[in-house]
Picture (cartoon, rainbow, N blue to C red):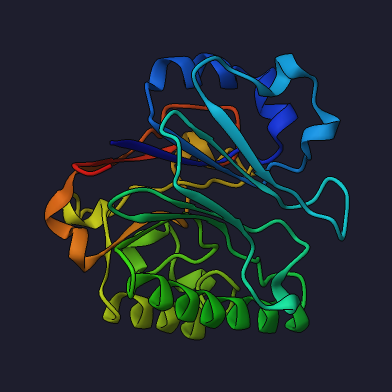
Length: 255
């Protein structure tokens, strides 16, 4: 089963930058998108529908043109859930959960903590609530998590770690949560195959950062340890443009 995740930084903008050309060529079974900044009623059929795929959207209701996740799936899920169960974490369109026969797939756009202390607190609370949610799911079947975590885990996951020690996205508390998440039995799929520095998934639009590969690795596939032997490969498609993030992929021997 070939899975993709991509923060498109605005679905309508990505469509204008060749999104569908990439989509048709990627041959993914399930394509998870984050930061769509759109709801289905804002899109024409030609903008959102593609033959052979069902599209599922979780859009922000608290602010138009903000956040949002979507999934295109060629494999019909057994069930679909939107958002975390707690009221506090509903309304920003941050999660779609698909249930397949052998696993759950969570497409998540985790909050960004850079704007204020309040948003950083919200991000950390969301992290904890999501881990609790994922652990509950694992009582039933394994879990695959993909999306924009908005945190670079280790020093090799960003170009300039020393200059960002006090920046949200690389704060000790955020990195410690990533350690905690992994300690619960979630494997970073990309790092199963590549342990070298210099591999990133997000580059600021400023300072010619992408051309210089001055980026951050903040987009991930995590696989609960019960599925570890099913991971065939994981990769970044860092030559694909259309967003300030690049698509990432996971090939899983499971349906």
